[in-house]
Image 1 (tube, each protein chain N blue to C red):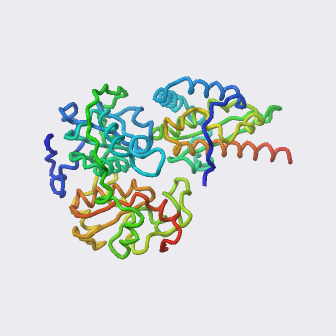
Image 2: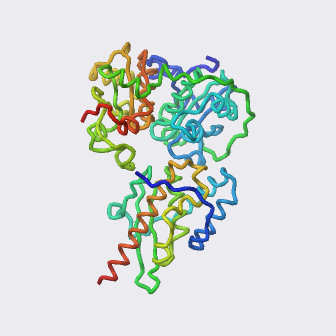
Image 3: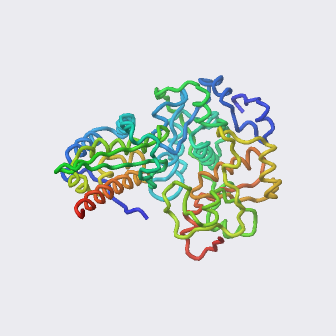
Length: 289
Length: 160
């Protein structure tokens, strides 16, 4: 690691403590060499209302999704997105965002598809930084673009496609959506537009562990002990398990992917980004209610 | 499923204030369009006191990604002047900006003018590329609900 890690004791208990930083750590390291801070939100304008000084906007849809086919950007576009933000292959990137870091962990997951090594999440995200009364600015930093190599996206290690999920049936799977979506009463997040799927329910055999159970009220991640109690104790998952996580479009399951992979040290967790908007619309796939 | 609308620069079938605002957006580059949207978000008027603590009685716009509440009043004057009251959280500036566009464009118009606004009008501001088309459906939903409320209030009165 090029940038030192946050030695906070809560973080030290996690499997990969270098993947998380506290607001205090970030405040002390703003402006450090080879550190780039990115804000990734559900609301595309939120960054423009005020952001952490020096932070740059990374929009999940406009920057990380291909604008034509339902997929992520390719290596060339990814290199452009990173390079224009001054991010090189060895840059330490800290990501934070709204909604308890849904889109921050989503952005980390996409960066991990391209094997960017040093990506960290700000524990508590945007809400905690704001709640602590820390500095915000509307100044958008001027960036000197750098060259980011064109890397081929790895879709086999932490990403699952529909066919992978079909082959995975009967093995550990975590549905991180709300209980209403899991049971099939709702087709989307409560209070969100109820559209996007022809069928309600869940993938047969999936365990219902809503993403929010891994988060505290202030948006920070629960302690390792609390997380183990949920995923290992209550759900009976093992760090050696091959696990697939899904939600509606893959953002909330990125949060759980992060928890299982980096906080609890699971060896193989794949995010099924097609999630319910693909499964619930697919012809001939099994659905359980 | 939401109807798919195509972006357009046509403004001659929009009410004057809406056409002007659409023209302002089109005159700007993408990133400046976001700044204008943010200004409109900031300019969205607060709810008048009579709506304080009465969000439950307002119509909730389910198409938006974050809670938006809407109330429509129609005056008994000959024009049937329409007044819009919209509440959206500061943490959801895009949604507030959409509400701001509709408020700026439609508040104070006659019921007939509001009902004459094309359903795809939200795609006339050049915003789909700036915020992604996916996020536009919130504004389409808001406009649809405004028109429905205006229609309900005016046709109800005619029957009386």
